[in-house]
Image (cartoon, rainbow, N blue to C red; front, side, top):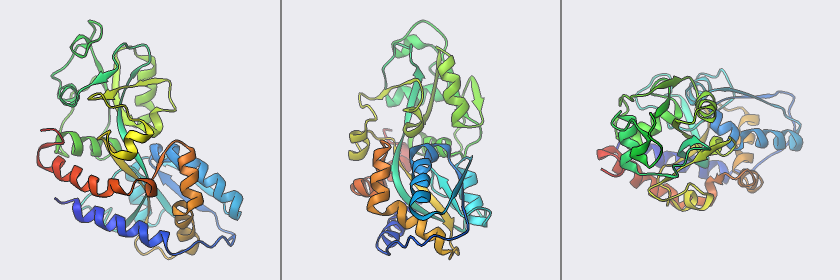
Length: 297
């Protein structure tokens, strides 16, 4: 599987940072972070606040999505990026990116809070995105048309991972009613639309007034994600350039992986990477299955 080497290297990366120690000498320069909105909500906002309080170093945070986080960090436009997908193999724009996994997230299916549907099967999820399921009554809901919201493009964090885990095809086309630029408009659209449905990250969805569906009877709870019982789990990454030797950048990464940093991540309701190391091997199996025909095919 093409991703296997990637995940072994990521495991080595997190171990390397974790054992190298943390120095908290305040430096004059700020840190500049940009990237995935889901990663930002999952832990980055609170982690940045705590780090500034601890060291005096301010962390400027911007959005822009996982692709921006990876590519701007790789090119040196920013100090640190945030991403909810791995780098694209063969991409020159991402070849200099070095990813460090720090937490676990999961893709989740969300609907309007007043929608009576509570569960969706993996097969139904596939059919939904392929345009084979168009009415809510097929999913146990009202006799009403389904309004599917999807992210624009195929290399967003959600779009890339969804195509890999559910369809084993990065080029898979989706049949959707609404195409939006990011997870924010997707979630907000579903809040306002009784017939809306879409996929986003749990770290973002749980902060919205939406209903999160079970997938094949499994709810994406903290424990189900930590144990890998909810199958659409994925790591969240901090990203730096491979040739980045800036001490203040490396110190922030070490803080994120330290006991203090991981406990702060846990306090946000996000599973720290270090708390679910068993998922690393499960994840290799997950991607190997997905690469063949999709997780359940």
